[in-house]
Image 1 (cartoon, one colour):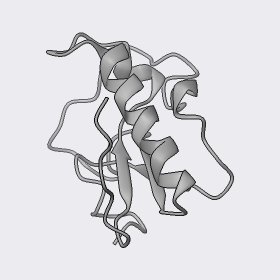
Image 2 (cartoon, one colour):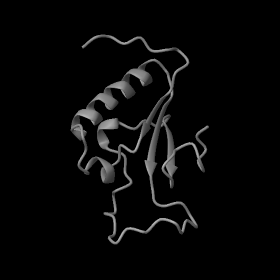
Image 3 (cartoon, one colour):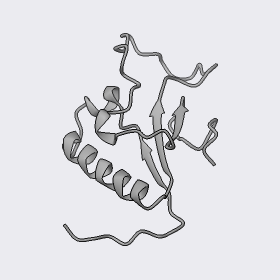
Length: 107
């Protein structure tokens, strides 16, 4: 695999690689996406660059324009996939909207 040069001021923001999302049908195989992302996360951590792991925990509070799911989610659906090898110094952001930059501390 070719070595990629990382910008020394970059941060890796990983969105929705959690058990409840990676189990869904996707255009590209989820295991390939997770594997590549885990590799990137390792590279960022090795260089002391920030890794931000974002998961979705539900629908925005007070939102009435979107129908609520008619099923209950498994207890672990918000958990980040183990392959990401979450570290204590990773930044964890939980969102309740489509975007991770609205209504979260990620800015």
